[in-house]
Length: 238
Ligand SMILES: [Ca+2]
Ligand SMILES: [Ca+2]
Image (cartoon, rainbow, N blue to C red; front, side):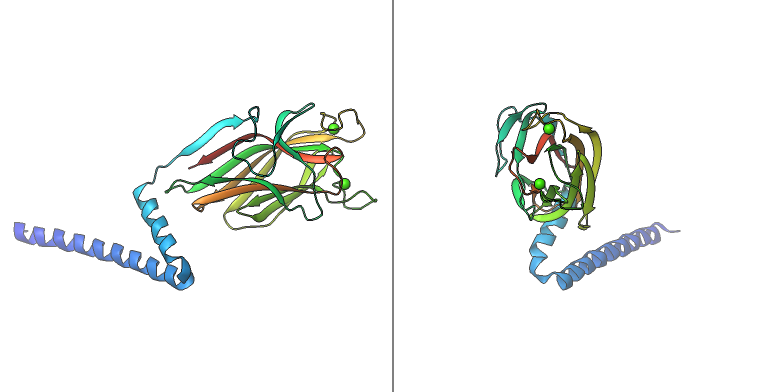
């Protein structure tokens, strides 16, 4: 092969690769435009960030133990609860289990996933049974992401039975740490009803630029009868 032929071939190969890549990029742009014409600018921005900064990692993995107040949490305060220590909350429920407290997180460009971790505390006589005997049924925590319900659980003696909303890109994993015992709570001397601690992880793929995690509770009594609270909160964007 003559040198000039070699150079032509190399040039040709590069040109072909570039053409393929360009076509794919243009195709992606067209597809995005067709599906969500209103969000083209946002999608383009996300693509640029993902291409330019693939190794972003932002975290506070040292668990927030709420010994110094609620920080950036909105909607509730912190409190020392017998047996649990300093917690975020507790809150009582309502019939809908609507979102009662939350925090917004700015997600760095390039993040492919956001993970929240926390202890979800089920305190005192939450009525998580299926039958309403006059004091409530199917009571327990409700989790929100960007204002949308992602999962809720019935709490029976601190043991959680989850119903997932099947939101795309969202996973909720819950592991029981303690249940079926009187840990303490707002009615610490009440030994008939049992408390629980569940370690929960919420994962969110391809996060929005601002992610809000929020909490509510389905319940029908006061905070001294039945409540939920949060402790040992962690966050990371990967
Ligand atoms: Ca208790
Ligand atoms: Ca109740």
